Length: 217
Image (tube, rainbow, N blue to C red; front, side):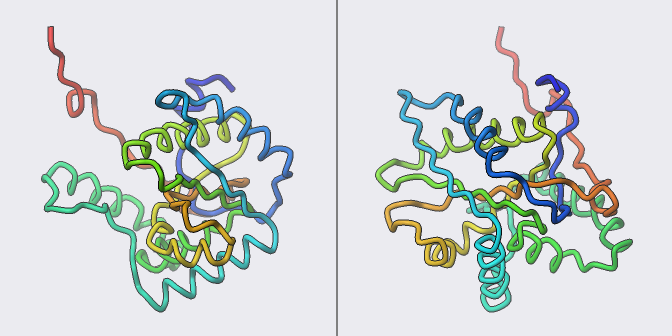
């Protein structure tokens, strides 16, 4: 699969088959990912790959914590959003909801508990950043994440970035014994897509370039 095909076909998958992903395959993906650019070649990313029973243990802990704390998915804004951002978010929810109704699932429960369970994927990858860095280096983590989802797609696997887990950082660090000086940035669900699940027919739309690009000649 070439790069443009991977970009075009890739979408977030929210139902995975239980089929395991070989460690060697994950290692191969990460080897490609580490070619991502970073400021001053700092390569500040760190990946904690959680598989098998450890992944199930992490999921149980996160779902339990979600049910106790009720911290839900959100856009993470610190002030009111402009209308165009709100419109995109609402549109995505409205487009996904019919597929969840077909599955008999409540939207909030599916998204929040699904996030904490990595949507049933056999592999969870936790991206971390050393707290010696400023927030500016989150850009490098974002670049690595972009490489990750595209390389996985090109390798025949599916992904779903999971931002909610950042709200349960203490649970993750305690469960996985991640050092205190590492900050949990985001997680990624990785595995084989379950194409029989209605939710995987859903794909978010994209707006045209006029919404994002300003030409200065």
